[in-house]
Length: 156
Image (cartoon, rainbow, N blue to C red; front, top):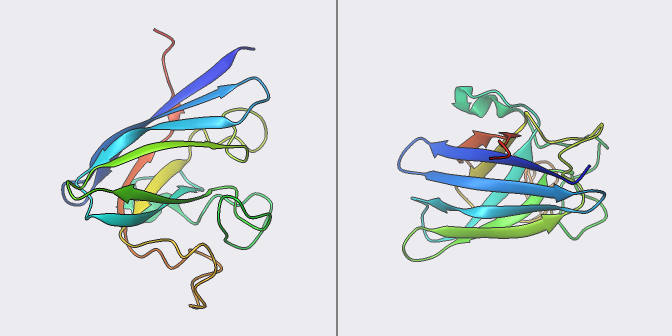
């Protein structure tokens, strides 16, 4: 089948903007690359959310994508939502360069992330280890400052 490619254009309430490119080679992990600008410096929770609905901004994208009904965790944890991608780091200029690979976010098959949303949060994701009541569901990552729907990318 070769590779499947997707793209998400990130927009947010204020000046958050970005584009992310997703590539999955046959039976390999999905690679995510891109950049997000307009963030406050530091760590920001970064997740795939269940719904590709931005009719009410990033708030209508639903919960984290979690087809296997697990608790929230770090990308390296066995116990994690499929959509738990940890944090992106924005430099002093507010720019986060994203480059990661993950096995749990395929672009095809029953647990495909196509048509779902990628969301950037205001605060760091505590990776399920913060002891806060929201740690095991959202990583206590705070408000949704930017999001985009993941769609198939043209092959040209």
